[in-house]
Image 1: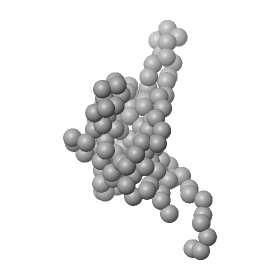
Image 2 (image 1 turned 30 degrees about the vertical axis):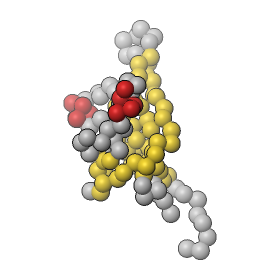
Image 3 (image 1 turned 90 degrees about the horizontal axis):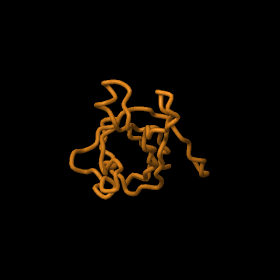
Image 4 (image 1 turned 120 degrees about the vertical axis):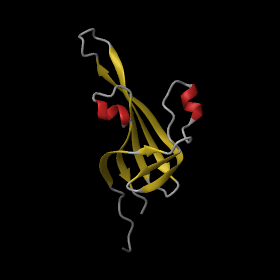
Length: 112
């Protein structure tokens, strides 16, 4: 345990539950989903300290029009514990289950 090891990214791919009333209103005003400032995952509450990166993922239209549609927003956040988490918000849920679960934790780099 003496030397610093490289942080490893752990793939998760599980839904998270935003804590009601903690959405980032500023982002919603810009037409983006409001990142939950607090959310539940793995029976623990996590608090977002800062948003490190934001990106949009597009897919081709499935109707052959050649248009691209916005499929999901991806955010890299740092929590108050120092973990780096990649969150995604599905804009176009493909199934009824996904309509309920819009926010997902894609991966985590845990603070050492």
